[in-house]
Length: 212
Image (cartoon, rainbow, N blue to C red):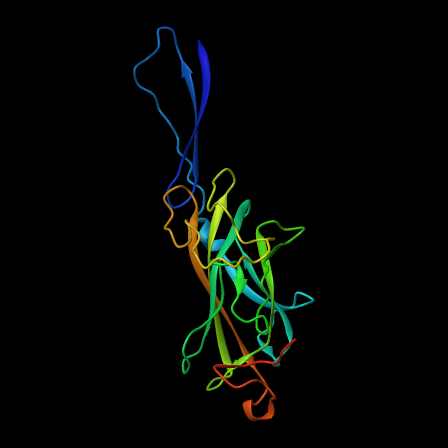
């Protein structure tokens, strides 16, 4: 009599693992029973939050307030940001950051560099500052990112903990739907600016924001 345990991994919307134990007699039977355990959908743990420097969620801010934009992914997943935009119901969308050059479109609003959390590896964050649109004091921030499980390579040159580049060519895997076990998801959050537009000394244009 022989005992075996088999483990199979499949890639798709996310990586799933199936384990089964088999007892094989001599001579070996031709039929086997197996049990497949499917993990919980990891997209339920993906979120985007804006906090102050102390980590407290920031739902109301002043223009120029130092903030952190944080993306949280599933446990044991690596996060590779693709892009972030700001929008309101009354103004055109404004691009904050993209991975075509791993840099910000305006460092008075958001910094260049994403950083991994030192204690929680499935969180990345980037520094930003309170700002508002001309016609609205409510800002919706939307970020898209790749979420990569262990052993799965998402892109050849991720934009976390790296210096910005001058190239305008988009990364090869940016914006590609998952077919190798990684996820591409977009998440949103919002904040309200308590400053009145006429009372600020911000620059003219789409956004009103103090320089650092």
